[in-house]
Amino acid sequence: FQAEDGIRDRSPSRGLGDVYKRQIFDFGVISIFGFEFHPVINSYGFMLMMAFYSCYYFLNKDLNRLGYDAKLASDIVFAAAVGGILGSKIYYLIENFERVKADPTGMIFSGAGLVFLGGLMGGTLGVTYVIKKNKLSWIKFADIVAPLLILGYAVGRVGCLLVGDDYGLPTNVPWGIAFPNGLPPSTYSVFQSYYPWVNLEGFSPGVLKVHPTQIYESVIGFGIFYYLYQKRSKVVIVGSLFFTYLIFAGAERFFIEFLRVNSKYLFGLSGSQLISLIMILIGAWFLTHPVSQPQEIKSEK
Image (cartoon, rainbow, N blue to C red; front, side, top):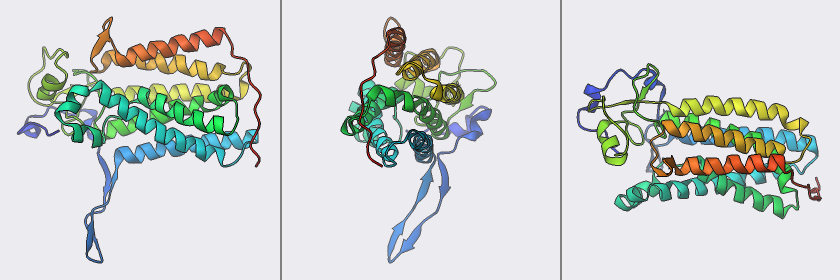
């Protein structure tokens, strides 16, 4: 996407908008043996890497404490990364099918569109494969990884902020952020073209300030992580920590969606809200109907 002509000259005060930066470092053009390279450190890719390494650190620490195979943490994180990225991208393409038809190559290969709920489903399938392969208890490991799921989400949302992706509705609140070079830019024309259901009454053409929902979700996500991480060694009923995570994560996303630009499908709710409600219901059901714990065979160290 390109910002409309002359948009930077007409952009409003950005407020907190100066915090976002798509590239952390540009190495410039490097020539080696006649071949030219232009390496850059992309901010979203960097934060995605930080999310997976953060999860690996805490997972490896807990698995060592519990006496599991040292290689298990890397296998789980790798499976979660591959499954999560594929699942989130597929979900994004389905949810934005009209834009995919208009620009299939651009949508498929863009850096945007790593949707958490799709990533959760894809990552769950990947991790399930590793757990079943090692003949471990799925529900027990769900408790172990529960705090890390929301940690990865919170870190990833910082990446979304840095590239100007997944922002919220136009707003005039003092902490609103303008993304003139976002994915897509937060311009009046972009909202008209891609989000026609958004009410633009009271806003003028040009770059619009929007709710920084990425910041909202990061702050809430880190708070949920802290709470779940403190509870991880005090689990009495197997699965309770994971199902608590489903309730907290589902509720967080459900309410944030009211400030997001996603289209509404059923009962005035977005697809993410409907999935969030399912997460909450599943979590509440299994918290009141505990799952029996199967036996597992630990991998040899």
